[in-house]
Figure 1 (cartoon, one colour):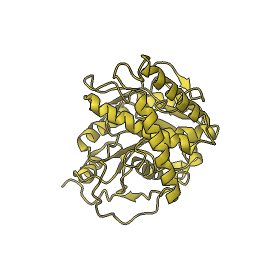
Figure 2 (cartoon, rainbow, N blue to C red):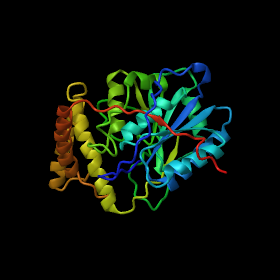
Figure 3 (tube, helix red, strand yellow):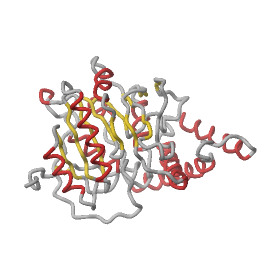
Figure 4 (cartoon, rainbow, N blue to C red):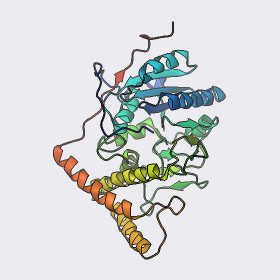
Amino acid sequence: MIDHPATTQRRREPTAARPVSVAAVSSGSRPFASFIVCTRNRVSALRACIRSIEAACRAHPAVMSELVIVDNGSTDGTAEALVRIAAASPIAVALVAEPRPGLAGARNAGMARARGRVLVFIDDDCEVDAHYLADLQRHYGHGEERVIRGGRVELGNSLDLPFTVKRSRVAARLSPDIHPGGFVLGCNMTMHRDVAALIGPFDTRFGAGAPLKAAEDTDYLVRAYNLGIPVEYVPDMLVHHHHGRRARAAIERLHRDYSLGNGGLCLKHLFTAPWLLKHFCWTVRSACCQACGGARFDPELQLSHWPIVSMNLLGAARFVRLAMTGPAPRAEACPIDQAAAKPR
């Protein structure tokens, strides 16, 4: 997961190359899977993520795969390290630069460059299970294309607080009775490339580094559902999330950011997915019950319903302001010259 600071120092942008369309690659040259990892100033965590993907590919060599890494404006030497990592990797690695901060734009850049039949979004602080490709092939090996699937997300370190994980062992399908936030986590989300072509790019107003700070993945799920594309959670396709948050204050900030994004999401889809408003009303009711001694949103972490209500309202107001300023900008992918800094 990319954590963007509130203010960023823009570096000189390379000349933009024309992005490759998600639907434009010749099927004869496509790998089965494209792992898409977006990163910003987290080169240490990224190395572990890449090693886990390489291990999964070695464990299942019959499943042709590639790795697409998007450097989202790193200033910690990530770009140089990636060139060395790519040169030594046993799997095909494509490097893309998206200097403009924002996870949604970085995901779009990675999606545009990916050649695989199945797109696999993994966060840079996650490690995939050694059997991930076998699970992926089992789910997508029957010709079914129109579906989004997310797998289980466990803590990578037991010292981290149990947040941004999805531990259910029961398969499920998204419906209006379930809030889409966290139903499938963006750090472990997969889809056929034709689904991505139907839904289109991620909305760059949402997500880390953007004004609405979160919910670019949830927005994608809602848009899929509105198109009649099933959204499924499966208890395999396991990744381990090393999010590193061990103080409750850090979890509280993330809780508020998620609620901000979900507020913008609710207003964006007010007419196309009015059932989201029902969930907001349920949250208000739960907050009132909490004030009278009822349960908190997360009793284990002592997270309250009230920040959800207030940040939902703030997110809705912020979305109105963003909508009035014009359409969201589109990302343009810039390929990194992998031959420019190979190890000597």
